[in-house]
Length: 306
Image (cartoon, rainbow, N blue to C red; front, side, top):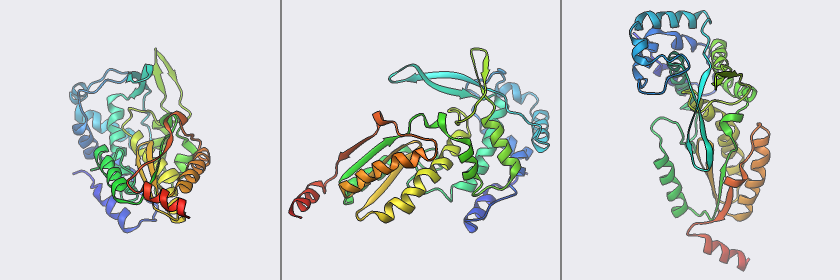
């Protein structure tokens, strides 16, 4: 019987500031690895070894036992990911994706399942991307309701330049250690990130970033931006605002709504410094500030009277 990962969440909720030191056995558990195998889509692209789900299934129990054993003794080594490209508007080459070999996908999913139990209770309502029971439509609906019903008049829409390529491993490790004290799990995540990318027959070592296409990258990106952006807005920006202030983030795209123009301008200025402190930068061509909302005329009139 698989270890019950829901107990991780129960503990995380009951002890919101605790550092969890016994998580790795959930990753190595054969029944959990089998569950991950079952959940994976067999029609997805193959990694550099060409192994498909059906090929792995032929000796499933033997493969899972061997995988579990290698994980337990820290003998498991992720293989390089295969680089491929999908169409992207405005780019001739396309958006780069990193395709893991099938066995690595099993391990990535096992780690993802553990991290979700740890961090879902911690993530804020302002975060919508790559989360359980959250969707782009919910994010859009929340933005619409805020603009229409709240006294907001100024919008800052922003995008982080090449976020997944530039995610800093040192900072990520510090953020993960706020909740995770299991060194074996942290070492495994580091190995996944360092596996490298194979393109045109050549393998390039990775030194930063979380490869798009990897199962584990979305949860790691949410952990990173939870501490860099979400908590900063919740604990510093919003409490110091004289008017209303709201954040909506979907992955590395986000929108902030403010009641007052000067506070929107101040946020835009401070955002640059905030991100630079964590090895990130705004994409200026995708970032803009605009006046919007049903209360803007009232606010402009009041400002003229004052």
